[in-house]
Amino acid sequence: MEFLYRVLATAVAVWVSTLIVAGIELLQGTSTAARIGTLIGVALLFGIVNAVLKPIIKVAGCVLYLLTFGLVGLVVNGLLFMFVGWIAGKADLPFEVTGFWPGFFGAIVVAVVSFVLTLPLHVKKLVPKGRH
Image (cartoon, rainbow, N blue to C red; front, side):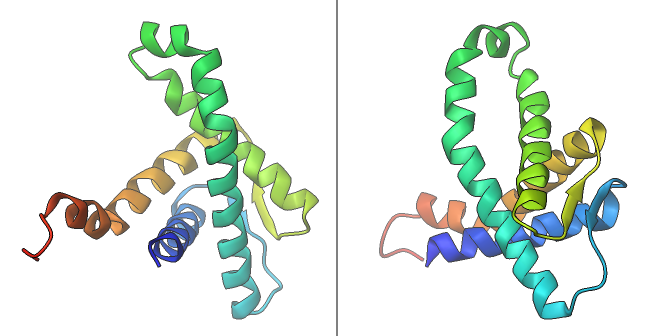
């Protein structure tokens, strides 16, 4: 159930990024149900890409992470978001990230909105069992 909640939170976060970041587009011409399906598909892709590639990149670039106090992580997240846009295009999902800066800012929006939406999950883990 937690997995489903996280996917839906990420889908909402991706949708928010399409609303406020120029260059991130949920392409028009589809029904509302198809758009929701696209958002869920992109959220799943984003989760898979982050789960598979991000740890590898962190290990390979650990010196850069240390030298930049983790700020290179913002660049990595932006590039991964661009990559998700590219994969979505190859999978015929009507989702597009048009460049580095939209990917960079879109990744920040997705991270912040996802964190806020999944905050109840984080708080639940902090509260001892039997005390909610």
